Length: 196
Image 1 (spheres, rainbow, N blue to C red):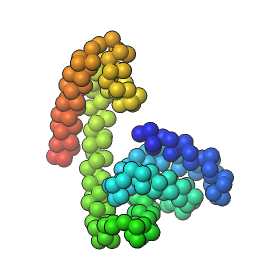
Image 2 (image 1 turned 135 degrees about the horizontal axis):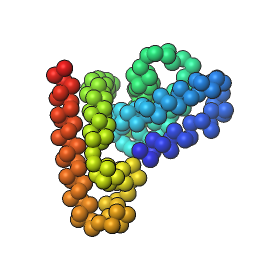
Image 3 (image 1 turned 180 degrees about the vertical axis):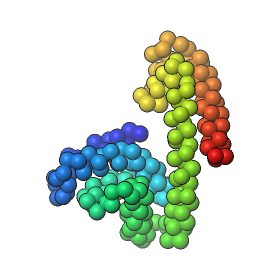
Image 4 (image 1 turned 30 degrees about the vertical axis):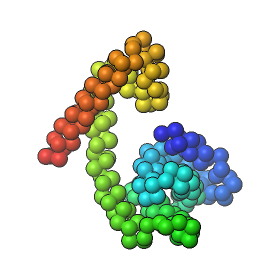
């Protein structure tokens, strides 16, 4: 999450140096909205293709800049994430070809197979993400506060324990209980949606 937000913050300041043709503030706002919504998924997609965080970070930055400079080519009303993943796939392919002489990397066919598997699973992840949001809304405020402190603020359990005045063991037990409740809720919610 930290990498994602850092990268988002780096997009706008560099736009002038890239010769970006996005002079319309509404288009800029739309790009930021779409990138904020889908950037993490694009990063996960890139990471699934290269399996190396340093390479994924480099490619993510390159993809975000490419999307920014070519956003005027994006067709409104189409799937931004699909477009972004296609750009990412092309960047990964080029990256693999340039690095092939240095290291043994996966074949073109293997890369395309991973691409298909990841994109096929994207719909399921969207359903699970929506279910997670629904289940988080149903949590008791105290439980939700622990989850937010632990994951949104990225605080380690020891820090969370100090913040809420509980023992570290109690925080670990509470987080385990909440994780299990969220897992069960997501399972029920996705099963219900799958039957409709």
